[in-house]
Image 1 (cartoon, rainbow, N blue to C red):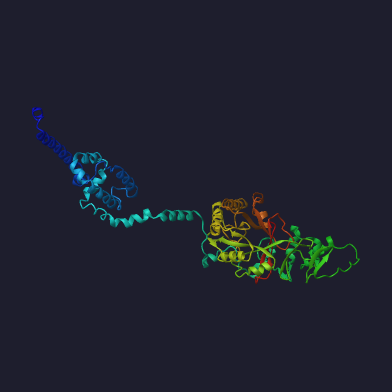
Image 2 (tube, rainbow, N blue to C red):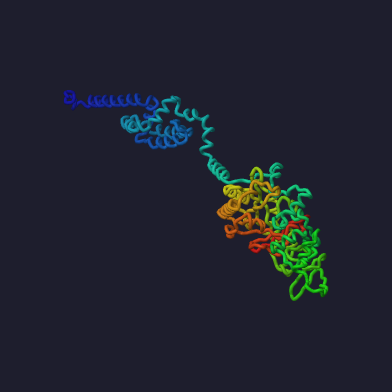
Length: 515
């Protein structure tokens, strides 16, 4: 106090006194900085301009660092950027800082605790300010491309999306042996036994050539056993059957036929006129078989063209289509179209009847492209061997995955029928489970933006499925050697033995009632 009053008039001593106090305060602050942050922090603070705030930068770095690295290391690109930005500012304000040391120190000192992580890193790397950028450099290639690559996330999303959908695999020789559409290897004795035990073979969707049915000049010839089965099922009219067709070894059936339907008098009937070929009667067009001289009915291939005749033999307009798979390897769709075909149903894939593997039909893409190029309308089908509803949904998803957004003119059909071997994994399903699988497939197809349908033969629909639960879907029914489908359907497969230009063998022919 005494010194204060005695030095009022002494300006020089007062200035020295104040300067000494200021130096003491500065030394105290410097010592505090050295104690808390180390030499690196002190140098950094001394080089900062007045009013510079580093806390927000530190906070942002802390957030990104904790997310990307989960430690207190700096991002490799930050030290170089910050040092280049800070050094010019420090050089410009160096003179001002020398004149006002208290101000330059006090402002950064307030943020020392906030910038503590950065200070610790600086203390751990006592090299020159430009060197810390090179220190974490080798680690950058390991983390930087993965974090900053904009495509990394998209690839993972695509992989996840692909994994969520079932896929068809490419067919191999081993998988081809499990194709449920593969024709069974049968002997002549096996075929004879099958015809005797199941006379209604024409309804089961199988190969009619295996049932001793022949095709002569476009007319289907039936065995006596098949004619009797058709009469019992009501698919043939008694008046259209010659009794001699029902002759058997013991002659009993012939006698019964004549007893029930034979004439009661001995007056001979006038001979019926014999026709062959095309004939117009009362404004209707008919075709008489060249071999039987009878009116033909159903789907017929005449003079390299497809025609449809109703139960009375009258020619009617129809929308014809074929269905193909790998077993129809070479199809000239341009010539097929000239024969009257307007649409094609192509097998997209199948589930192996043994392993349950989903397999894409190896000819699908070729058939699809060529049919489209020929201007034909297209639908697809999958031969199922699903034994659970989840497997049926997988089959639907696999179909949609292969289509990849391509538009269809006809539905995606769920083909449910017996395998060629008769020992397929789904052959023994009961009505309830098989129907649930069909419904699950159709509902999944509908949910994925396509129109669903179910394919089977008449007997299969009647005895192996609950039709009451399938009426809301498109029904594609197979029934041969009749003039029309015995059950209501949207598409009828009326022949499996047609011969038309564009394909060298027998082929399935369908009529669509959907246009």
